[in-house]
Length: 150
Image 1 (cartoon, rainbow, N blue to C red):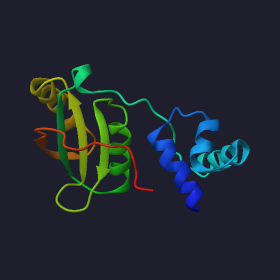
Image 2 (cartoon, helix red, strand yellow):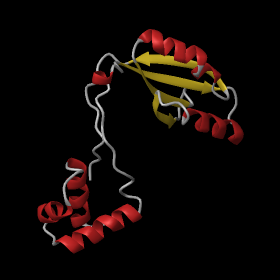
Image 3 (spheres, rainbow, N blue to C red):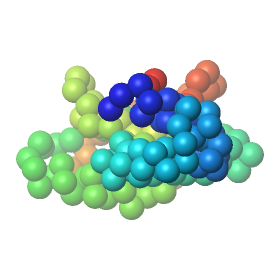
């Protein structure tokens, strides 16, 4: 990957709907070479996909919770089962396998603290292998971005 590829990635992140002709102009290439590079970045998995970003607050999802999960055991079967189960719940928008005191950190969005409490009792505590959940509530979002520093 060279500087031109990085320029393409920066522009694609900043302007995901930019037509290829405009992208090519912004990065200093003609249409076809820019299109080829873009397709190669996609084929190589560097561009993992494209998404529409929604405003959670305007959708009523005003509560952000970081649920720190600890597991009863750490065998491959338990880890795989938990990871598969997490993917089934749209309220869990991010999940990270961690080092340190938590085995996993899940970011959960909810309309209210009461809704999160129900989700905790009915779902999170029943995920495969979970022994405990320690929840932290975000007071405000200071920075949230999907833009990577390329």
